[in-house]
Image 1 (cartoon, rainbow, N blue to C red):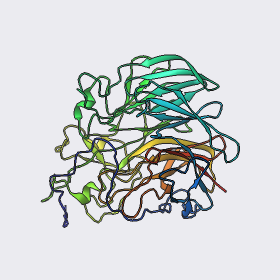
Image 2 (tube, one colour):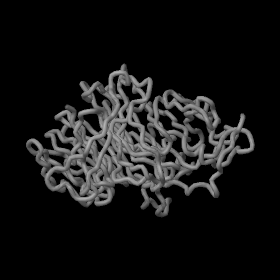
Image 3 (cartoon, rainbow, N blue to C red):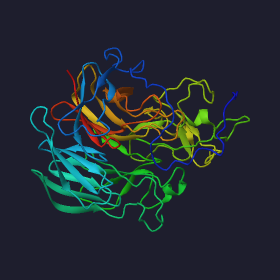
Image 4 (cartoon, rainbow, N blue to C red):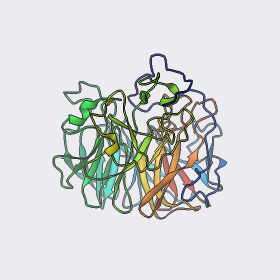
Length: 447
């Protein structure tokens, strides 16, 4: 394999344990849909729009005008201020719930008339890092860091708490001795009524997670009535994005590893190179089936159309794997060529968090049905990858390539005033977006 002039990272980048903020210079974000996207021909380029503030929402960072890029004519408003807002779920009676792992609570937002901010209150507190939220009828499922619980929900009240799966791994697990990088968990309810829970890896590269009981770096399936978790999919480093598609398939968006070594033969083989780490491995958006393996930490999804070349074009659609030279140098740990191609993805270190589906008719403005991913942005990429809300068109049972729907949270110098976490479509057709850095929930409306 031909090699090119490259910069080797002195001592390597700091090992990544979680997605954090970045302060490095960055170019302006790309704002138009990528060529070849299912709706690229019908969706116009994004346009600058000033973020509106509603009564009582104008404190920092909105004490000065903030601009984002959004579809032309769309209106972005600071609908509510919710510090450390994370994942979202709509109740059966059209109230928006917001999880707050740092505070151990769930906030309820009750929409008001017109442009009025929602009424806001704490629905429940005293939880252990609550993150994922999902409804099935009047049952609310909450993924805490150490267990999956359910409640009966009626008109803004919760009752009948049940522990459906206890002893999920987090930093309190005796064998982990306080070391757990990805303790936050997500939950989705399958069309079969079964419960799916994401369990992240304990670190950047921690192969022992694959042998743990219950398995870590995996998506677990739990019976609707509760019980022993079983591994549904493995090799999922941190599948925080977890959602069920219109056809019932479970999809995950994965935060992949950092500091991967250059895997090809030549003088740079095994080296941690800035140019290679910047774009490898990419973040997977994968459809899960029973027993599927997404490769971590032995195989990495590869975006290179010219594998190993510094000037290679990149693609994130139906991509194969390349062996990890640091953990699987001779391929004996896992046969990467035998793994199913990754359906979709996004740039390395994007840090996708919340995942949801907008079903028919989907989003206005030519977008239609599709998946929505909150992209938190990189913490150690040079230059940093900007935060955004991404859209993946749903057509004939498959997801199309990534399209930027909302961006502009990162300034030209690489600093950020906001970081989206999750986007969901509301019962009114508007888009609601949580932002844990700005401490906000945005309401985004089409003309």
